[in-house]
Image (cartoon, rainbow, N blue to C red; front, side):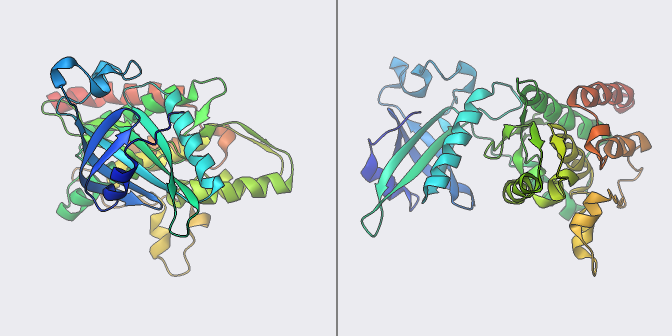
Length: 347
């Protein structure tokens, strides 16, 4: 794990949006804040290279593939304020898991540093700095809000093309031995980059909740422990039924992600999870709607999405995980649907 104490004074300046940040031997200038959540802040930064002609800076790091080096030197930097040993362990786990994956539809971690900083009372805390490629078009959630305000919908083909890319990224995670589950697949964790003459590029991000997928639950206390973990790490409207009400004797596997993937496909179509309607109903229960797979279909585009696309969502949203499809089954089906509807889009 990288760890750097260089540039410590500059880091204090960076809290207010100014100054430079050192991540190991590379220097970055903060341009602006582009996001925040919990104890984390995301900044747009630009690399400061003493002599660009010498090929120094991030481009010289052997661990960073040339395709991930920014042409204009801009990157996204996530800063995490760490105030406990548990938080420190979670960040270390996120760094470890992020470093495992190498796929065009998964956001790569380019570099990182964890530093010790003196707290206001004289004690020591930590701060983590994680460097990623930048995608300024925002997330699926950001795009959905804009489209909802305009009462616009994505075409069937675009919906499937975005979804196909998410499936490819998840397949990479599920193909590990043992498989990894993302555990928080949702529109807010999908970066979208619009490309002229091509489908949008979709990249799954945020591996803070990713863990080995398969767990043997053999007691009530283990079941409750898993539910508590899921309540903290898996967003409620996209959380699989078995993580809401876990049996005392069961096997959990990567198909928790398939449920979240089905919810995300619905959200690509309609802008929200299929179960969020329950939050607006008097006496409605999000948990009950999810456990019973009570899907409601809002008015869609005109003409509406084809029934085959709705049935695809229903296939993934099986309350019983044992009958839920695996990612390979999903990919075969999405490929068939694209081949079916793409010719119509080109006609």
